[in-house]
Length: 343
Image (cartoon, rainbow, N blue to C red; front, side, top):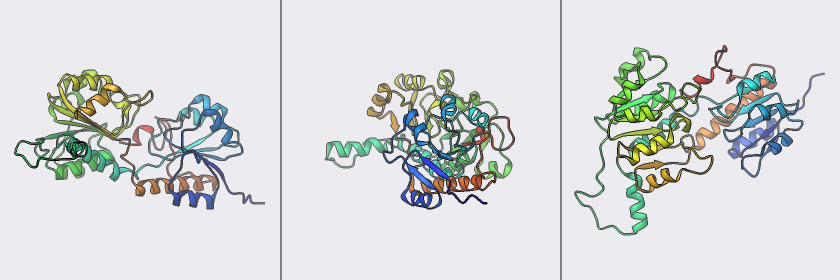
């Protein structure tokens, strides 16, 4: 007799109302109403008799946690593009299927990268804060709040995948010259409309550009891809933009480079926050050398709904006995590789 029981799922963070309502119709759904990261013990307890864990980047699903999961759990459906928080090898060894929600964040993330690219040289945050703080303005002056134009500057994109290409399209419209470093050179159909220059050597590229923008996943190979040595090799007065992962940059070296005046600044949507934001980084933000935003690159209602819909599709396909469309496999396996997720 066919089992008509609805799949039982645990959702670790609050999702858009329309997604929670749809999940509630399709599945037996428990949602973490507190909307705070769950302790490992609470996560394990909440998964009793559940089929699927709907996780997010704030859930640390390492080898130890995977070993403690109830036998009923068969799938980890990540609400998000990145899966840095999940030990994929351990999950597969335990017989778990892991999915994510790629492709839906491209436009919003590219928009944020472009906003940050504009905000720092044009002193947008500084100008806004000055008016709010002073609550007065003497009026326009020829020398007031002078910044720098983007047109004519060179942008070096690290990772010319979906998001990197979308950033390049926006940047070209602002008159930036597009340079890029990527694991694979893009075909002429991509390069030619952008007049993009491919660099097989990252060190050489970062020495030649005015802005370095990071759009590559966090892997063993890309961990601190902008290390102290590469930051020192960047052009005097250049900028760093990061909307990808904090681990791509040696944050202490970045701070030191800005403090010394070698780098003009950085615009960061991601940064180290395990023990609180680095006070030196905050001091640079207060001095208007750094623009910080609170991991907002994908924070649009449209993106969050599309992510939720992708989670639902993945769960339904899996529970119906089919391969989910966004199945994540480890490096070197057939199918989607972890290194392909955000580039």
